[in-house]
Image (cartoon, helix red, strand yellow):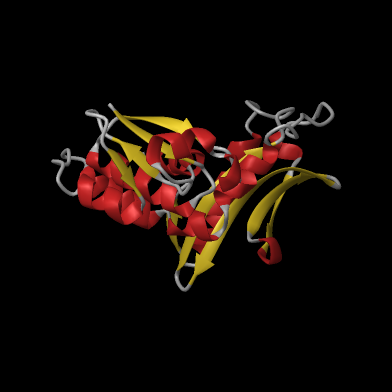
Length: 206
């Protein structure tokens, strides 16, 4: 199995992972230290401290994105390669809105708020264009939001969150349902890049 030495924040590493996904190649990920001067293990292996580095099954060391791409071009892609590339292109709005960054920021800080006795019918859903999201609120408390990226004639829903104190009680469905209704009222084509939005939209169209 291939081994990729990388860091998640590195765009070159990310590009290599995307191509490996498109090819349908399973691989092992080895994390490296954030600062190049600390990467003694990587230097011993590859002779340098730059990432990404790919180690092939027979122990060949390939350094740098261009060289790794040349190697990967010699591999036979699986039948889902084209579909994965289309998904990658569709999710450009998520990358532009830094959806990954927002999710990472939750790590270590995502804690439930106070218990909410009311149900979703008591909540209000509002569009907040300055923040590029629809929010669901109970009084002054925001208990969830559906982030979007809007362009001419299109709205791409990129990420949905609901306070964990309210999960599983219908607040998320209420939020997304009203957001979809509002998008349709404005004649927008909906791109449900968020899996939860996609699931609600599918149920509504069934």
